[in-house]
Image (cartoon, chains in turn blue, red):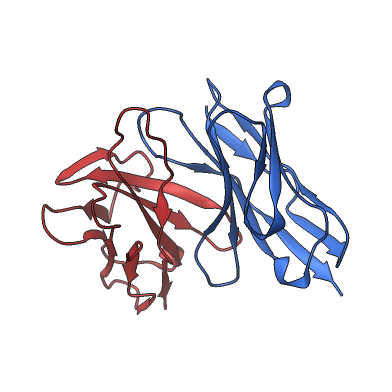
Length: 114
Length: 117
């Protein structure tokens, strides 16, 4: 069955520290991959997406993600975290053809210490 | 250029009442998806609709839940006889019809937060 796994439920980092959020997927073929951020009580904001091509993807707010086919991973990174980055982060995937049905991970809640 | 519009943003219903959630897709988008987010969980797919057709309802509970996307007007997610366990955030997403090699993503609304008391 298709699935997206985010192994870390909670992560706490200090402001200014680097960040890496993990995401692994299980699909029959390489899916399209996405990272979203959700602030409390808010909707989803797309940070970045990977369809094909360059495996290092740049997104908004200084985020980037690297697609690694051999590890079935799409980890999100940021070199220096800001207090405003505290939120919940969701990795998502969908098939590369046909439906836009997304499979979401369970999310990683990021806490930033001042 | 309005995005996906969901209303109401917040909805409170007593147990046994009906809840109607509305979703207006991005103009020109013909595909709508509904997702449910339970507290402390990720989004779970419920149903995928095109105009006047249900394409995939594999994530819909078998009873009390229904969805439609009429030729005119918004998509509606309807929950009959709500129970406390229906309390969740319900998100709608829309996408255009795939055209050739064009690749894009679905656009999500801000969600409707349903509270059953």
